[in-house]
Each structure stands twice: as C-alpha cells, then as structure tokens.
Length: 386
Image (tube, rainbow, N blue to C red; front, side, top):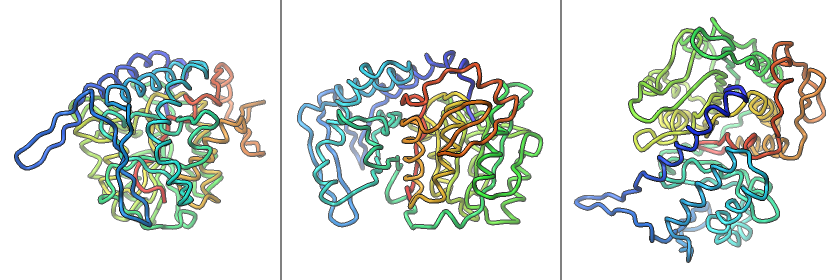
C-alpha cells in the first residue's frame, strides 16, 4: 500500500526530481571495443515485434531525443501535480503521436490488443497507460505493460485463475506512518479470490512467507506495505515486512522462482522505479529473480486510489483472459467512475464492500479524483502480460 494522500503532496518534488535524474542518464550503446553516446538530435526509431512476422524498424521524423524526453517530463510532471485535463493531454497526445501512431495501422491490421514496451532508460518512468490519441486513452484500446527484455521473459501462458493467493501486509509500523487501508485491501482481495486469511502485521514475516510457499504452491503473492526506491546503494531501497525491511540486494534470497510466482503485486510506493543498475526497481529485480509478472508503482499514490485499483484489479483477474487485461479493466473502471467510496463502503462493479471503521474514517477526509490519471496510471505491469 502507499502513502496517505496528504503525504503524497510532501513527496511531489521528489517524484519530479526522480524523472529529472532519468533524463540525465545517458542511454549508451556499448559493444566490443566501442561506445556510442546519445545525442539530443538522435531521431526516435521504433522496433516492432509481433508473433507473426519478423521485427521491423520505423523512424519517426521530427521525434528527436531532446523532444521526446521533454514531452515525457511534461507528462510526468503534469500528472503528478494532478493538473487539469487540458494541461496533461497536450504532452500525452504528442507522445502518443510519436510512440504509437506510427505503428497504429500495423496494430489494427494484425488485431493486436496488448502492447508491451521495452523502453530506453530515460523513458521507463512514463505512465504509458495515460497516452492519449485525441479521443481516447491508450488503455481504452490496448492493455499495456513494460518488459526489461524479451529473451529473459517467460511468456508461457498459465491460467492465473487456477493458482492460490498469498496475501500479506501491515498497517502499523514503529518507524513509519500507519496505512489504515491495508487490512481492508487484504480482506477484500482475499474474499474476491477465495483465499485463506491474510498475514497481517506481526504475522507478516519472511519466515511465514517462506514456510507458506513450502506448504502450498501459491502462484500469486500480494504485499501491501511501505516500500521505497532510492538511487544509490541497493541496501537503501526496501520493501517493509512486519518485522524488518527487505532491501533490494536481498530480494533474490526469497527464491521466488521455486516454485515460480506467476504474479507478484507490490502494493507499495515506487516499486517499479529503478536506475541503471536496478532496471525498473523491485518490480524489475523480482522479474529477474524468477517472478513471471510483477505489478508495481511508478510514484507515490494515496490510500484511496490504491485501494480502489487493487480491489478492482482482483475482481477482474478471475474473468480476464490475461493479467494485463485485468489491470486494464481496473484502470478503466476508475477512469469511468465505476469505483466509488460512499457510506463507509467501496462500490465496485455493482457490489458493495464495507470498509473497516478506521479505513472509512481515514478516507472520509480525502478528495482524490479517481478518474484522473494520477489515480490509475501509476501502477504498471512488468514482465509477461500473460
């Protein structure tokens, strides 16, 4: 889970600085005995890979490195500031025209409905779901996600409906702010999935994670807690368990590949943020450590938005053909106003789920616009969309 909506405001400048840091990271191309440095005048080239034909390249005239990165910064900043639609759509539509419009005919001819982007370093913080063609957002036509590498991604399909859910999290901490929505989040998603009671607070431990996975082949791992990615030493970035912090450099020790975790949901702050050494942060490293698909966040998001998106995601996961489509449907539900908080309950696709009193009290003082891209485009899927 993330920070309260009031805490988000305090972290807004840090989010902005994060994107500035990315803009200053050179996307060097290195090979045996040579290094090619990027130039602001470099022209964008899109490589298109489909399942039915050889990959091909398309150059986008006028889309220089400098122009694309400037637009990316404008879109990121305007969404974080929860700017009005007219402000963020200007950059969103121009980026759509550079990143998607040149291949749109190809996508339509091949009836493509899922897009996976493998981005240069400087564009990995873009909320791809929020790109706009002038009439609709990208997610109104496609499910989308990120992938560190095609060759390192397990794309074999496994029916997610047949796997078990292990839900864990914490709402109180000795050294960090409380997350009062976590018990409600875990309770609702456990009910939706028909899983056993979640591990909360002092039961949210590494020992319980390991022993539970030894006793049952859980295919979905959901962690609702604090998390943060900080540039620099891997030991400074962490996901908070009930009894300790698990740092970036310790993630591989969880052996999430044995058995394979089909889906890991990191309901925590900035878990899809990374740097050159740790591409796509916790989400990217979890993917590299053997998790097939990871759902992580690009920035600090408030409790209300996270609770709405997570519960909607699991309600769609049972019926969606692939995991990326379940995320798309959850984002669309928020965009279209189908997720609301009223009378001490969350209204979700025509069904009402009561909130715990402490959760209802906390959320009653917030006024987040769940239709705004800030609320629904922060979470992104890393790895296999299937």
